[in-house]
Image (cartoon, rainbow, N blue to C red; front, side, top):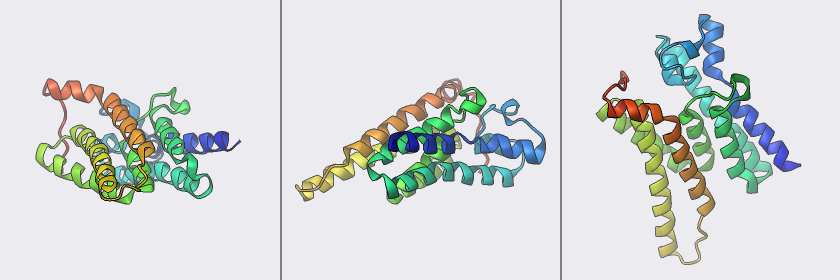
Length: 203
């Protein structure tokens, strides 16, 4: 029963298309027909409304954060499941014919719930890469990859220092799955980067 409960909680939370809802309500526009067609904060920013983009970013983070935090309080053994389903909910929302966003903000919310240190690393890396290359997609992919590597290395170092340290391989596997999914959702961006057609962000 708890599996069904966590699945529903996580999926429904992750699948709420805040970018679409906010732009529809405040601008009367369908974000799916603007810019890249993505429902995330980056595309909302392309509408020219920075406030809506910031609100979308925050809400997309929270919709990944809350189900994992709730799960960790009541069913801690299911936090990996909760995080994965919330992420998949954003990528494949049933309300939008399973055509969702790229999942970066929701991923960050999940990451904050799992590890504040890794979430800080992600944000720091994202900002640095963005400042250097000016590509949101590249920053997201590189930052999620960095999180996986550092998490694995951190576990290895802790194990070397303390042989009794319990390895969190489940979290590492989950982070790797997130990385692969983020690469998948950015496949068009990868093609654009190769062809030098990717749009830069204004920082």
